[in-house]
Length: 178
Image (tube, rainbow, N blue to C red; front, side, top):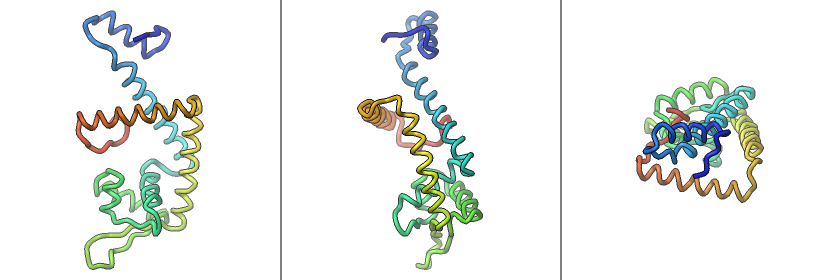
């Protein structure tokens, strides 16, 4: 492993190597950079959404409904499972989005206790704009990598995440740092 003392992450690894030569520091260059990248990307997405009058929870809810395909309708249970949040959290998200006119909620017509949540026209327009803004910004941020490098990084990260799930279980991820 080649370390550069001018790089702040490598400087951490070099310091640990000096102080604890028996301890492997091989993970620092990967894990610390992943945490740093996740923080930078998360903060940038939060800023972009805030400027658009939204937040990550709203984007998650509206995007999940939009990706479900027409008629853009899911039960609250399906939403909770798809977004990997609790039923209580999905209820709060739906309540807020309903007040903003982005979704409409209605009891399921089959006599069950299920509640359907449907994307409204305003919600559809909102999610289309948010997705364009977020994905456009993220590809702009990744333009420091060639297409081949992005493909390679995607494959490597998929392998890493699959390996982490195999070792740590399949607990759904929350926000960075949870």
